[in-house]
Image (tube, rainbow, N blue to C red; front, side, top):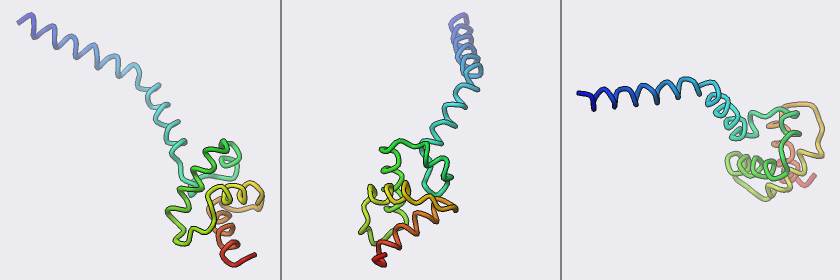
Length: 105
């Protein structure tokens, strides 16, 4: 019986540790969800705060999902979004960058 009580105590201790770490773990999850964000959900300010590598990764993800004709590289799209400071949603700006390339503008 003491073996069973020891196991229950160990499980209870582990659960208490998880509960105590809950807010920290929740913050880590929220932070990673920002890292996993799509270009679709970023604001212009969020875009500006991304590293160059992250911008290219976001642009590549956008191209993979939304563009059937991928004549524009992800690097070119990221560069276009950096240069284009127009007001509006980042998604709309990305679509404008891609369509400008396909129409030759």
